[in-house]
Image (cartoon, rainbow, N blue to C red):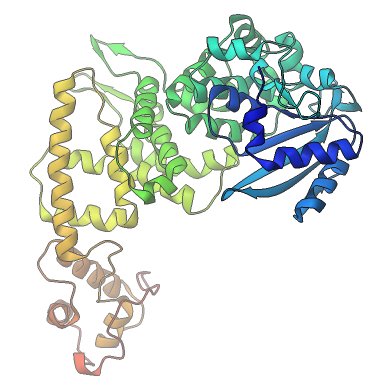
Length: 501
């Protein structure tokens, strides 16, 4: 199999080949780019292995392309970016090497090696294929472990014995499952058995690298496949025990609950396969899927049995939201707006579903709009995904009810503009009108006015809300010291005014 014609379409490969020849080096394209080329998949990352110094070759290529080269001497690698037909290609250069490992460490002892040594140390046969950039054999496929056949058979297996490959780098156990999940491949039985035997070795890998692979599984087309493999391999209980706790069905007096582990995976798949094209949600895709993964995470801790009603999980949404920051810390995920997005969706995920089961009031809709704010679309996507049942008609009925809720939300939002709602009557304004210091009265009046706006009793407009404010103050024996025309502010101001004195 020869890819000369394909490589000729991108002058970058010819440039690398020329510089390697000038330096008297042999150079090869290897790894994921070759795999994707064989599979007919797009790729923009190129790995180059040379017999010699990868940094020296990168410098030479970078000089002719007049582009910056990032060098990493500790690892013997270098990287540059090059543009071709409007596409940015990332090219990494490394010298061929062989590696050996101590049993208690992931850090290898690295020595210069041959192409054969380099291919032997690759993780899987589909990633061990190379393409020659030598002039005499330019474009020729080098496939010592029959990766092409593994691609045709959709099989993940290791080039050497799996015990050797996984002992050398235990993260490869996660990578095997990640590739299976991304490509919809099977893991060869002996390879999977080795993962089961060696799953404890994953504990010596840094949490950041484990989470990076986990995120790639979460973002795969059908993430439940990857999570089921993680579970059956024994890896999931070592990296994410909270998720394992969801598994199982308990039955008392003939009453059982759903298996929340498999329900969660179905919700995750539903989110992954939704049909909306909302660009905001696409930018937040990973975190929307994390919200799906965590939405019921506290159900085991809140599970209760009542002889009259059966099983309940009261408060699991609030407890789950409280758990989110700790889970993110453990996973080395960011403690920022992404975490807060997941936390909000976990806390609110029952609210829209509850509205489908009762007479919908404008007040309830307004409160959901206010509480969800800019994250309403993500919340609604999660809640749609949370409707799972083997009964197709039952699911469709719930989705039709959900359509009704969404129409109501849209109509009220258009009318009242309540996303990121801030009452025009602020604590500072209340203090100014009645000449009050921060006090309980200020907080209580502010809450009363907020509720009146959300109940539709008054609009969120200062000229209409002001008489309501005056009436509430007089009921409490307060004296108005400033009229509307005398106020120094006419908009929302955030102040710490609700602390009792």
